[in-house]
Image (cartoon, rainbow, N blue to C red):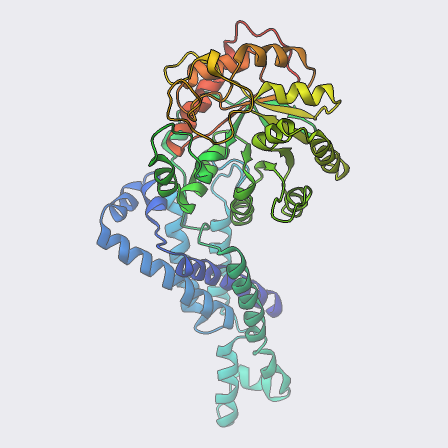
Length: 501
């Protein structure tokens, strides 16, 4: 019994200690988001704490160092009863910030709970340790052993128990090497992933926004994956902006989408029903970190290209597999460039490599000519990802001036030529192709990078055959976009193509 209680005490102690250290190491960590979004009958108190910078500073310091000292005391077994009381007090504050007295909105992260959640269970265990007066292999017992040894005339239960066995004292040192091993592993993890504090009282999403959801977002099948028909686009969180001549937009996006904001945005996405994200290859490390920090089950489609530096057409694919990506597709610009340069064998080779590893192989493009050329060559992916939007908006350059493969990053000052403003160059040809093929299609750039309203863009893409749409969203747009997608799918009138996913 003593050993079991000791293990429980050390486990809870490590949890507290790790939570505190990650917050200490995180740059500019604050519990403001956690406190500002609290709900329930005690929310006024937490909102009051969050409303003052001086109170927030005090709360953050107490939170960080309280977790560290309580965790350290529990782990090594010093002043265990006082540490247990402190731990219970902190857990009570966490518990009533988001009281589980109704249906949880945390979805698959924590499940739907009522009254008893993980915070409740941990508090109960600390209460048990407090009343049990745990005398396990802790530093308190080691100190008591040597005190009793120096005063053998003082009878005590501890003295009697330990007098016959010196090795009992050595057992009390077991927490130190264990702490060293766990601490070393955590430090290595921090050095590798720069882990910040995204656990515990750190990041919470806006539940008020979630309460506005109109229903469940419909899903479709892509291979064995059941994906939401609205897929999160990765450009905005990756810092890429198609903003025509607004040259500051990319810097603005990067300044807004800090790592903390990205995590909040992704959490909100999942809780709103968006269970898939399509990312650029450079964003892969961020998604690995997000999943590690939160335990997220979001499905990740990663876009791969060619490692030009090493002339390796398979390196990106290998890295995607090694990092646990779910679906792999050839990035749109790369497909366009390879077709343009008559390197279709490279596309075929990459598709074969992805499939040989047991992955779904997707093919993306901006110009419809890329898909037509691949089809003619017998290169048929498991799904297509195609820019799908109409061109009835002011900044689209004239159709007669458009040419295939021009969506390659080059911008022209002449308004009559491409200037980062039109991504589905020939909408009618795109719609004709999509309605003819017998494979799933994911439409992207459906809003022409913000030139088309979601109501209009979503409807055009779905009516013209898209099975999924990929949309870049800021956090404040997610719930609205989910609701618009639900309404659009419930009211489609002119879709002729059957659903292939």
